[in-house]
Amino acid sequence: MGRWKAPFTMTTIDVIIPAKNEEQRIQQSIAQFQNPIFNNVIVINDTSTDKTNTLAKKAGATVVDFPESTIPYHQAQLYHFGKILSKADYILIVDVDEVWDRSFLTNAKTIVEDKIRNYPIPIFGYKFPRNNYTVRGEPITTWPDLQIRLLMRDIVEWKDEIHPVPYHDKRDEPIDNISCLELPYSIIHLTRNPNVTRPWWKKTAKEIKVINYLEKKEMRTL
Image (cartoon, rainbow, N blue to C red):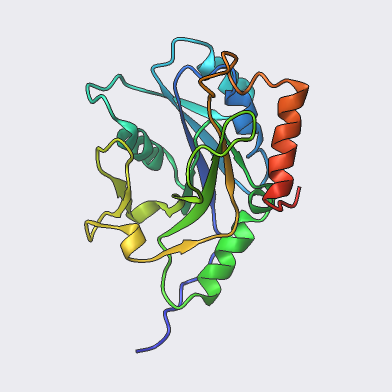
């Protein structure tokens, strides 16, 4: 059997950011992806009652309101909604409270196009190590916590679960079991510390130093 060869064209990537009442940090999240590598940043506004919609538009994102859902855990519906809105080859799923590796963000298309050219089979998804911290820089989970976030748009679907896993829509099998590649670009996830009443995005000078320290600790190229 011959080596799989993709019909190569320039890759397009859209960013999908589900958000609900994230007025304090939505603009900071969008700003990470404001470069020509990404075609569009699409914010799925999940019935926010604050200024998330307005601020996301001001930051340059395409904002689409998601209708109120009767399913308590409807993250999969948000992802699917973003998939339908996107016209790109790939979608990058992003949580608002994440800091992405800048070396990946500035080279994402080159990385994907290199894999398309040189990998022996089609790659349906890419996973990233996510390192979870408190605002004080303390690890809160055993990591890396691998997250499949960059996905071939036309074949992916999600099931209604608390933490939706991407499936191949024709095979009804998790993409991770078929063809998924881990990339060495970590995501920093800063979550709320139960001992800190101030949300993490309202950073003090000390907390900014924590982020800088974490970036260096993970050997990032900034």
